[in-house]
Length: 299
Image (spheres, rainbow, N blue to C red):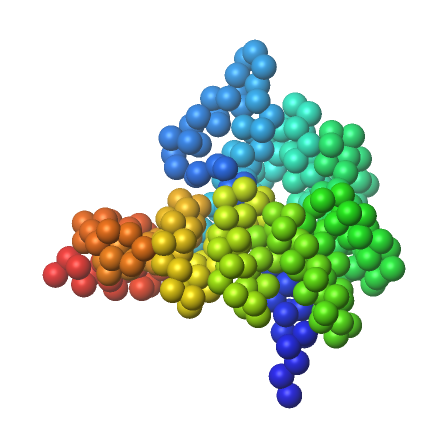
């Protein structure tokens, strides 16, 4: 028999696994020009920018999962990303410290703790709490996990609320879980808005779209899911806008959605030239639908 709470819990777990690693901050668009701009800012002789270094790391982290053919190549990109996170932390940008800790904790817990501690001192206390809560949950310490998620949630960090909701759903406490999802959504967590939209209305899907532009936990995969949910509610304007954003974040499927809507004139003025261009980008990023559609428009 289908268990709705367990299905939602599984979906939230999937988002946690996606969002705790390869996440691109929604303000940063990974075009080569933007990458070069961050590179210049990060490597300035006077006053190098820690946030720019962190943004470089996030771009590389995302690229490691997009179109990279070999594991060796992927590992080299990720190691380079970590080097920028380390530099970001050294320049006292808290998210850089947090990003290093997440990526090294499985191999060097003591060193990860050092980075977490510095992140907390630099104003990332609630982000660190939520990440430590995930670690506690994975280790079976559910009491500690719940306490950490609760503190993060009360600190206005939506990701903490979402993880607390996950624990309630796994205990079949759907009423409490939904309430926490809505709270997480209001506190800026795009994933929570998306999951709430599956049971509520298009309003949550639109809120998910809006949050994706500023939510560090909104992965390219999540953007595509939100686009599909928006379109199921005939919200093509919001879907098309988010699809283009997802395409800029190296999601081939998002590029195909944007191209298709450009071809059909859904949510955007019909433009076959733009459609063909973005189908081509989708194909380059490994999306088979994009390749087939590009070939079709090239006949």
